[in-house]
Image (cartoon, rainbow, N blue to C red):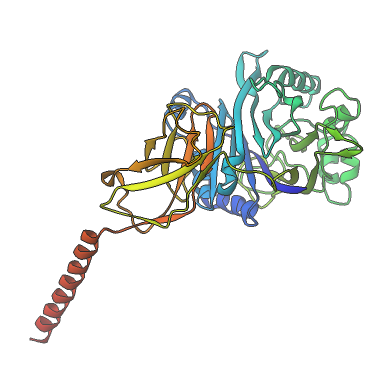
Length: 446
């Protein structure tokens, strides 16, 4: 069975603006080996009223920085969901885009008895190569004494997050469940001084015996059946801002592993073999990112997936190139399993685009429903006047299904070359520049 590589990162950013260079270092560390999927969960994104209103019109600064960095490396953002200060972004490598389907998002509030979104969870579910995956980013109740509240909020989130997908109406119905975020569980029955003393690699086992999350999981009070990798890093909270020093303020908050990544597998058995599997590859804290009072935490997984027999629902004929000044044709074949509508489109995208639903350079409506099931394929035409002027970039075509809310097919990468008129003008300009340089040289010799 083939495997998909998923990297998940969680970071409580304490309402700060994004430190672009530090953040890029963190992201590039995660995607340098090109995982197939990349999920980023934020907590405490600044959510003042005017900022929340602005986020309905454009991306928040953190989303802009993260997506611009990740998408420039060949990824596409297929989902973004926000609940006040809780944000979750999901990216996939472009080659997997036609196999990411039935994307749905949901959120639930748990702050102030479920009326306020300062605490709660956001989630994204999808089918990927016929495996269902659910990602949950949560921010649970704060403070040492609210252990039972965190357990209750877990139960609230599990029962409140729902989807319209018939096979996976709840979180726990999915094949793979990845839960991460600022879970806010603390270390029990130890003083601040004792926790700081024990916060070294050789003493962490003592602290883990007192970790509230581990205790709740063992008692099956919350996160029943979930797993966590070995915690080999020191507590991720609370630090003086932009330092490696645990809290030195008058409050002297106790260090704790508030930031976690957990997973669960829904077993489906074929004979005696388990059809689905999740393998944890790495689980780390990134102490070199000194910005917030938290340290970011990431995990890399390998997810079992049936990729060998997968075929896109829309297959484009190969495109060698398009030429400006001429109408451009594209042909594609539609699978009988595709759900289409008169609102589907074929979009032209510049390689490195961020989101399929709004990052197109131009588009044309797809062949109307009822005509798309022809064996010979379908053809659409991009008028010459709409072709892009940038002939240095690389482009792809994507078929976007409105009813399925996803991309059903991606073409090969191709270029839009200059027209004969463009080439002649460029040649004349080059000659003109040479003549100008010659005149200037003559004048310099006088």
